[in-house]
Length: 269
Ligand code: ASP
Image (tube, rainbow, N blue to C red; front, side):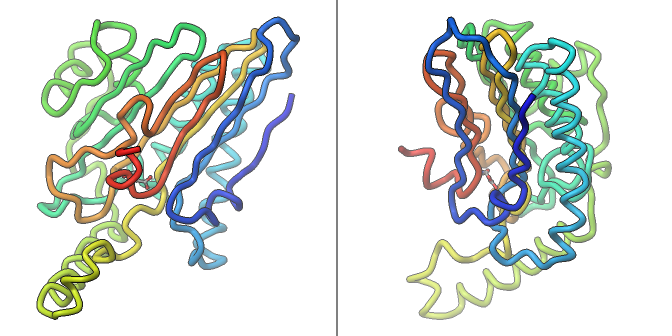
């Protein structure tokens, strides 16, 4: 059993971090592997900020690893790892998600099974405690790939997922980050300089998106990503994370990938 604790490497990633696992030959015997990330924008993490995220990263790796050790699937392993991070307030996914410009938490998540190339995603979900389970529901229970907004919440509720009020997602540091981003935006928009720097309006806008990729003993790959998006994003904005082929992708014949960074830029390519 191998696992890579990429927390340091990932926190140090620049504007786009992309984790990939490749499978050369589906006939080989496979040693299960799980890899996780806790988002980009980490170059400026203080030691303390790093430390409080290190433990949950380990816990998430162990949760995924436990599934693989019991002979479980890559899909179940990435789901287990992501759920740990969604439940931890220090990550921008589930509890701890960033705020939209209107003060909502709108969650995006996706998952892809490399053995069947089936996938599911939710976007702009406001009440699903673990959005990654919503993404799996879309894959398992509907003939769609992406369900957004009220539809995503409705599907989750009807299928018995744990639903929460918006206040469940509240964290003071994300709320403060929204206020700072708004102040900065106002300041910049008042100046000539702002016209030329439209992309740098946010205060550490995307720290803490989470992702996982895994390879199971049968040689099957899976990938999953979950995020609150970017601080001060427009209400209704959807990023790369719930877009299959952009934020998340898995195919046994090639690669499993979970991305983090400014989705508005790289989802175009
Ligand atoms: N890619 C995410 C988004 O644009 C944010 C992130 O990865 O931090 O919504």
